[in-house]
Every structure is written in C-alpha cells, then in structure tokens.
Length: 346
Image 1 (tube, rainbow, N blue to C red):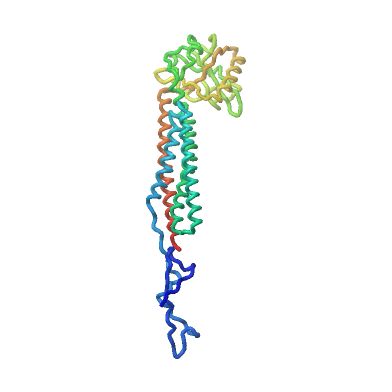
Image 2: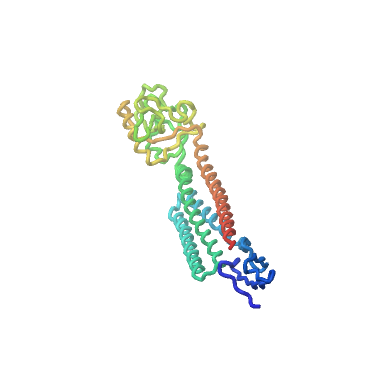
C-alpha cells in the first residue's frame, strides 16, 4: 500500500518520513472511528518525539577559536611594543590589515548566509552560522586588541622607549652643570649632598595641583645659586600657597636622587610640562630666584630599576591580555556550539 507523506510540520531533522494508515478494525460490530478511542499505531510519530540532533563540526569550532585569538595577539603585540614607537606607519598598517581581514570575513559570511536562506536548505545553514560566529569574534578581538594595545603603550611602553632613547648622566652638580648641557638627559644621578629645597617649593593649580621644588647642592638654603635648572615635580603633593612639598621620595627617602641610589627621572609627559613651567615662574617671583632653563625630574630612589619596571609591566600586561582573551574566546565558542546544538532539534 502506498505510503502517505507527512505534513511539513512533521519533518524530523530534514528527513521526510512516511507512514501507512492503520486498518480500521471493527469493535463490537462498529468501526473504532465511530465513537470509541482509537489505539495509536506505532507508525504514527509520538507527539514528543525528539528530532535528530545536528552533529557539531569541530573544524569550524577550532577555526573560530584560534583565528580571532591570533588576530588579537597580532594587533595587541604591534600596538604594545617597539614597532609602535619606532615605525608607527608599519604598526598601523598591520592594524588596518587585521580590520580588512575582519571585513572580508563578514562579507563572506553574509554572502553564504544569504545564499543558504535563498536555497531554503536548513542543513546548509549550519556552516554560515559558524561563519557569523567567526566574524563576530574577529570584530570583538580587533576592538579589544586596539583598546588594550593603546592602553599598554600609553601607560608603560611609550615612556620606557622614550627614556631608553635618552642619555644617562652621573655625578651632576646642580650648581656647576647648566640645564642646557644635559638637554638629552633621561636619568640623572646627582652629586653627593644634592637635595630638594622644600623651602622654595611652589604649586600651580589647574584642575590638579602641579608642584615643583628646586634641586640644589647648597647646604644652606639661604644662599642662592645663580640659576636653578633642575626641579623635582609631582602632582597634588603640595598646597600651593606655602612651602610644603611632600612628593614621593623627597621627605621619606633622603638618599633618593644620588647615583648609587638611582637619581632623577626626566619628566616625559608633554601635557603637564607647561603647567610645571608656570609653577616655576611663580617660584621665581616668590623667592627672587632665576631658572634659566628648567628641567623637570621625578625624584626616585632607584632610577634604572624604575625604568626597567615599566618594561616588565608592559610584558605582564601583554601576557595577561592574551591569556584572558583566549579564555574569553573559549567561552564564546563553547556557548555558540551549545546554541547551534540546541537548534539541531526540529
């Protein structure tokens, strides 16, 4: 007897099923269909029968795991380290190349998904779904890599490479060596007896308080030098209206600034330099001193170790970033796999 095709609502897993209508058996001289309950036949599909689960393809899962992560690592790396500092054009070319690859992936995924929808094939939709997941993961990876790379470069790497390009000087006497003679200084070790003259400190307020204090070799603060070209600086560590400079390592570490204990680190922040100059001008007017060519330094205990710590911080940030993104990508792929598996039921 010819089988009867089920309606579209009774397709299971994309496979057409057929059944043979059961014979109408008589019960007490009457057909079952005339008022008595009909016994379901095994040929009828049960109303809660599970559909066929789609098998997950592990190849696109691995692609979705490693391709976005590789994109993140590449973009994060070129933005974080020396390529960004020494060859910025090449660095941003690599970043834009990663963006181009992401756009190409998105266009390909859109084309395949539209084609599958046009064909009406439920089976063919599985591959475009992984392509969409790959595209979304690449977009997320590129955005996170750019944000993290710029953050790492701005906080750690840039000042490290800027300081490494400058010279280091030892045993500098503030009363003998003028600021013009050490314009290329990154790290300076001052001569024994050098101190920060808190008595001639000053602050300039502009949103924050920009604090400065002259660095001198005089044991007697009442004796003025010809010019004060070396200044210790800090943010929000003075009141601005009296001599109370208490920035890092000034009062609690008298050995800071000397070469055997480090020295002064050149201020590398261009945005803050004009405000520190205004504070120096206020100090000149207040204390009747002269600063022919002021240079600004952070007063530290161990300058070489401080500079090296910036490099180590940049490397730690990078390793933590690529590890965190890998875990994030694993979560995304697993979640997408579970979602696609759930869609496998009819």
